Length: 262
Image (cartoon, rainbow, N blue to C red; front, side, top):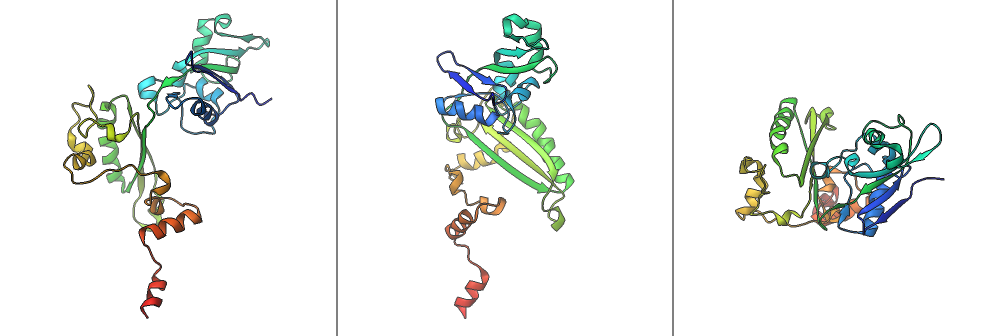
């Protein structure tokens, strides 16, 4: 028994997720049933649902829909006597405790009944890395601390700091990686900026790209991940993809150019 089934009921807007299922399996099952439903939980597909929700469960949708544990409406708990208890039979205090109180303390979670959340058909996600010295990265993080809390709840923006992979070559000491998730297509922005009660105090200079778009200085177009030639310089794509991208941008090996020139 793998105990990793995910059973959805779109009519009630809920799903039963067994404790052995991963976040990836949960997301996949939801996506197969609906393209306008989601769940507020983490982004790593191999993390188990049982422990993740038991610890609270923070993710890209949490700014709008709170933690994964806040979207649990029922559960099956196996206690020390081997009884299988639902929300009613375990009581509200135990039900409150298992949603964020940590895994393996109150019993074994056999399954969670989660609330499915409304999401748009098209969303926007991005990852931006900014390597640099400690002072440069600290200034970026300092500015992020003032910008991120003022964004609308539909907009998630986090930052992680780590040693830069290029530090050994002297290009940078650290790297600030910004992860963004917006519950809409970027083309749906109102007048080029994200509007909301908590963004009115965010100056437009903090949205420099949007300013360029608004003035007609740049033309923003949606690019499929498979066609993003920038991955050639930031990632390690498969050989076939690498060769296709090299050909697409017209890059040539210097030795081939010299041979043709001679």
